Amino acid sequence: MGSPDEQPPAQSPAVRVIAMPADTNPHGDIFGGWLMSLMDAAAGSVAARHSHGRAVTISVEGMSFLRPVIVGDEVSVFATLKSVGRTSMKIDVEAWRRARHDDRSYRVTRATFTFVAIGEDRQPRSVPPLAVQA
Image 1 (cartoon, one colour):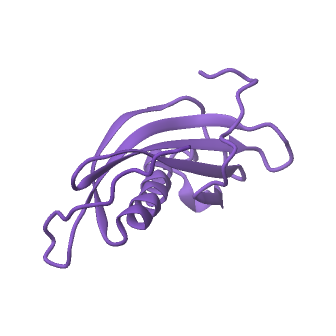
Image 2: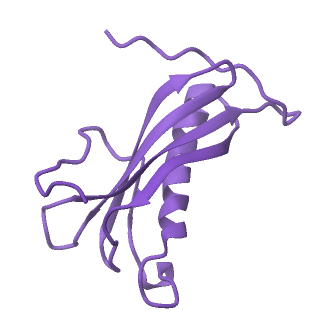
C-alpha cells in the first residue's frame, strides 16, 4: 500500500488538480478512469515535448490503485521520460493525493505509459534520443 514516510518526486508535477464531485462514480468515489486520464495527459505532455510534436498512447503497464482519492483532495501527477526507442517513448507516471488541509502526500497509483510519435500522415516518426544525464 505504500509507506507513510514516502515522499512525492522532487520535480514539479505535470498536472495538479482538485478532485471534485463531478469526478466520482455512481457510488461517490473518485472514478479510476478520471485518474487514469490525468496520468495519460501528464505522460502525453512529456511525450509531445520530447518528440516535438504529436504522440499517441499505445499502452499502459502496471497500473494498480493503492489508495483512494477523496473529493477535495489535491491530486498531483508526476511524469518522467524513462526510455526512448526509434519512434516510441516510455514514461513513468505517479499520482499522489494530499488532503486539502494536510501536508502529507500519499501515492495513489503508478504506471508506465508508452507513446509513439506520429506525423501529420498519422504514421510513426522518429524521436530524438534520450539525453544523457551528467
